[in-house]
Image 1 (tube, rainbow, N blue to C red):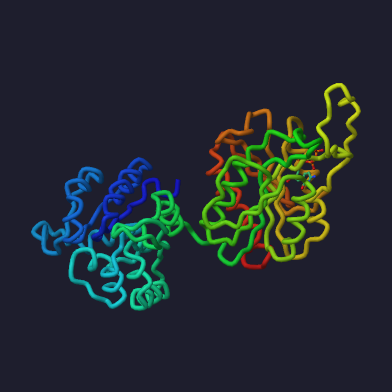
Image 2 (image 1 turned 90 degrees about the vertical axis):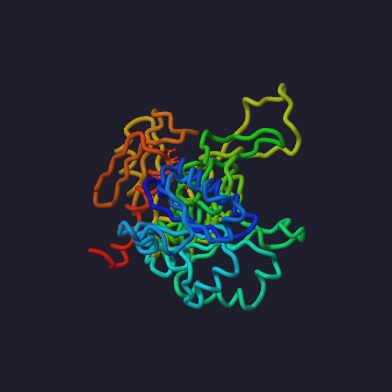
Length: 402
Ligand code: CTP
């Protein structure tokens, strides 16, 4: 979503990983980003410019002095065009050149002329990467606001094993989305919960619900791209932890309660998206219960209401609850907002088949009775809509916005 219709300039420098840049260009095009590629002269020895030209749909150059006849000054035009630049792979040479203000080919002059964010994805032999000169150059560039992706560990082109590989395409895409996202959550520490808790009956059976965890994971991912420090407390799901997020795995409502309470004092915001089971078996059976030994007599007891407890204890924390209903959605949401002492509540109409789906329908309510309604939006979009409302409310509460 972040990359759609964005102008992404890919700089390709030499290295065996240059072929992965071709995959990156192709993926970006599939995501409806506009892509242009500039190669260094040596990179063109590894992968032909025609490959990138075909994938990007735009002529690929490395010379500084071409096309000027048509008033097209490539380094300036490309620098102005780009919403973000990614150097994939980035050699020690290009890092060193930019860190020292050397601009002697199309790529380095373009970076020098560019005011858009620039992301370097270094890939080289581990000893080269760890060389104090390279490390000092990286530090210099980071201090100047350039972005870097840590190389991955693994087998390197030279046959050695170490830290120096170009990371996976998904990781590069995550970083590109990160550099393009507004950082309106910078300095805000957020606790997010996700998934449906499981309350064990015996070693094989449990009580749970249909939550997939998708909404909570989308929120955690969007938060981390928007600069928040995120701790995600998750009940079991089939999802992968979003990049850059601290993941704490729990199973039961009691475990989620404990994990939340341990971290509550240290956070500025809570987004309680988990579907916490309201009941747990009163007596856990260590042995598997046999089917003829009275399942109908399983007694249940209430689990702690984590959100109510946080609403009771809150000081500076901005607290957002969720509410899943099959009837009287708005009335129930308004009631829960007040009863649980929340700042915002996100109401879901569960008759709209939201469980496990990639789309959702939400109503966001605040304590002043402002309402925002969205029907049939993707959970990714919903995450950003919820965060827009959350950061606005948070900033107002902190006296940073009227
Ligand atoms: N919640 C919680 N602890 C519980 C139950 C719910 O923290 N034991 C939180 C959920 O994460 C959600 C909010 O409370 O953010 C509302 O959950 P919901 O299931 O809609 O409502 P309940 O409070 O459980 O009330 P009811 O089941 O009567 O609708």
